[in-house]
Length: 191
Image (cartoon, rainbow, N blue to C red; front, side, top):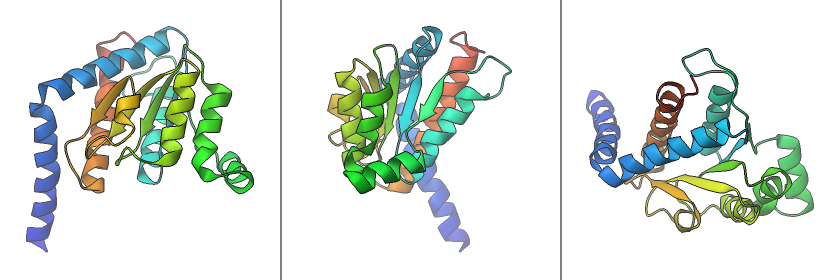
């Protein structure tokens, strides 16, 4: 069991080292943090969506923005698209694939931003949300993995984790989220 545990730690570390060594990806992390901060400073709302573990990451980002990360500061407007009543209503009456798109159609505007999280980049409901957000003039940041899927090319900034295992991609996503929050609170004037 000890060997398996160290192997799993090594897999996580190796993916993060690949990210750290990828100058373009590190630059995209910085550019996306600046885009998030600009949205907040301009009075926009940061919307988020994801499925399963990515839904939890979506909610985690929102709670850190609204409440706080490390520093006492004014709240940053952020909402996730995971209200169970809305999702089950839309899913029952129409299709779960369109539920996040309906949120984006209803709430997104040109001053807002959508963080769309999908480890594969191919989740139909995430793709519909990104398309609907873009149709409203909303910028889209993708957190994805593998080859970025269909989500990467329709996003303003795509952070594609260079891995293929969902759990390692999700671990990298939460690291990126924490880096965004740190930068927003310390480097970008929101802390």
